[in-house]
Length: 440
Image (cartoon, rainbow, N blue to C red; front, side, top):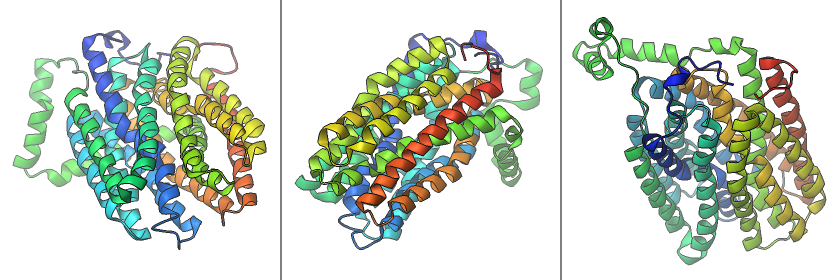
């Protein structure tokens, strides 16, 4: 599991400094992943208020584009993190994210929601994602899955709180102030992340290396004093858009496996409230379903991280894919408008899918070193941008006019994704170590 790490002995795997960084990552991901995991609370409101006259397929583009843009930027911002560290990207991303949410509060039409939420807010989350996740690979190795699980629990905490918060604030202070309050909370969480998150200092170079290359600050300074902005930018883009890793079958299969697992989670969370409303559940119960999914995922995510470090990250992902398939076909498909079955589904679905986001970094770290983790992780999410937009678009086509039959077909669509996910995770593991039983 650690063969791809070039200097494993230098990674502390704990200590005061590492856990402070972990806490900062946790706080930042409350905002960064919390928004993506609570989109259902926004979708169900604007589709029945501001955009009630727009078709469901058109409204769905707001959220599929948000995920697409969030993922697209990974290939650039992962490279940015590898080169220049965490602080500057986090500050820039915080500004974009919060400004995007304030603009979302003022939006009334489809194109305004696309510009504010799908592009501006998503760019902010994209800039922040690589440093918030990538920095953990600098501080943890054998405990990496556990660390990623703890950090990404922040996303579940954020989504759980945001869903309940928005539901209450919509009726008490209205839509605009509900989104503004959300923006201020995100600003607070990201502010803590900016203060605490930092990459681990690299080993000091030899005197000759320092003379030949200088440190990063002097390199940045030289860019402007020598007028080499264009050259440096082109070199950066060349490094960021280097897709030679696509020749590695392990990376390709991992990307497909991650896509299917994430698509199940994101599309279900986005449309679960609308599904419940169409089957006759009350507004409070429909919103509560999202909260149940996220709350039940919190202890499960921690446990899955511990199990992944002990028994293998890919092994755990195969197991969770099988469990997700059983839950969808066993509970969601026959549930229809049954409150009890839907609540049971939400709880078990939260447990079975909670490992997805937390174990993606740990699985990625098994096929690359921490020195280029940002680039590999960013490239993976860049490809996920295209694939997720495609998958979300297909989901919107399945839902179509939002009839009961359409939503039943949507459940079958999610079940098919779950079956495919289990198969591809198995193939991804096989591409790395074959069929042998091992901790991987």
